[in-house]
Length: 114
Length: 114
DNA sequence: TCGAAGTATACGCATGTATGTATATACACC
DNA sequence: GGTGTATATACATACATGCGTATACTTCGA
Image 1: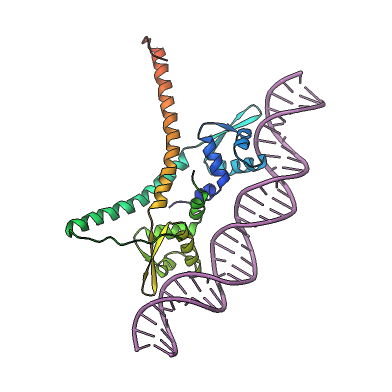
Image 2 (image 1 turned 90 degrees about the vertical axis):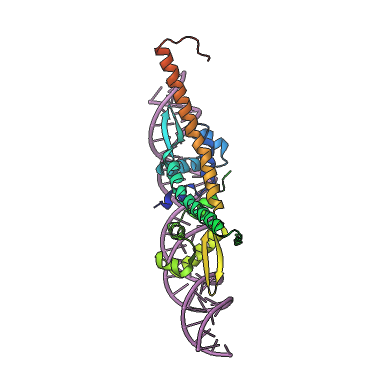
């Protein structure tokens, strides 16, 4: 079962922007401070959280520290979602089978979220 | 860009268990209370949050309310992750290209375009 | 209409979290 | 060693969140 901790780590807009910024490759803390509108102490704290969650890795480079993305948690997320994709696929299968059995079928109308 | 609100909604173990329980199909609130070790009021609150996030839909059934999963946010998540999958794929491509260049240098096959 | 079952909400409490300021630590360069 | 740059941490503050208890709302059945 999926641990909520990963989602907890991703549940912050600043951290998401940090991850987004790191998609281009390694980033020093100072680079991220420029791109994300948060004080340096905040970026460092977020990076620590991301690191503890395994989402990023660090590499010293002189007096700077270069952060980059780690693949594993993303794969974990993909695997989790795959388990739910099965739900829709199964629904579609049943729907198709029902269609085959009875040519004229009416689909129920789901409600929209508020 | 991905909204952190979706992750925020998923960042609770009780809500994850509720979603997990709903993978089998529609569930009444009472069913979920039995499967998740949380008081009924808590389950209702979590269901409201999940509904506002678009993760579930409701359907009245007499005095009960049947909740079920909605596909869209999961697709949204998949699309988000796909953007990061590209990162690893690109890394692998560069690695493979580097390997090819190295092998080419080892075995003198002339005339590779730079 | 009344009671009971199912569900939703109000409230208080305890805990968690994101932020900035200030300060500490690590490293480079002179 | 001393100074400046880069990064991390301590602290206080403001705010959000999850939980249970108690209560209101809705629907069914008699």
